[in-house]
Length: 204
Image (spheres, rainbow, N blue to C red):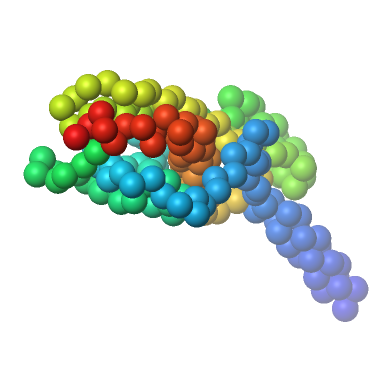
């Protein structure tokens, strides 16, 4: 009976240790941008055209994210994506995006250390992966006149334990980096609302 009690105790301890090895959390950016929803949109129709994307590490087309965030911000009367050649627009947004995953530089050293000590340190060892995204968007007139350029970048750390679910970690890291990037871009455009309001006569 004592033998089975000892085995049960050992299994319980191991189970508790393993449960502490699957945690992860996304670190919020230091300068978090909060995009406000405009009460009165500018009477402008904008079209978004993605001209280049360099995306790896699970990132996907960021054009829809920009279109969605601009639409939700209610900055413009209408947001078209993808814009077509025959669409009537006041402003064309030409966007380039990049996104990548950067693993913890000490990943292998930490893994070897944990393995050599028979996984005993596993609940206390944390990896810091980064999901990085950047963008340049150029506002142009329908006749290709350059109007304004905005640039932004996001670097989101994700603190991960060794048994954290990789797919969930990736999904949350990419979502956070993409969201932060779009908030920065739209936030910058909102700061220029007065300037943007004067573009209607220039683009028609």
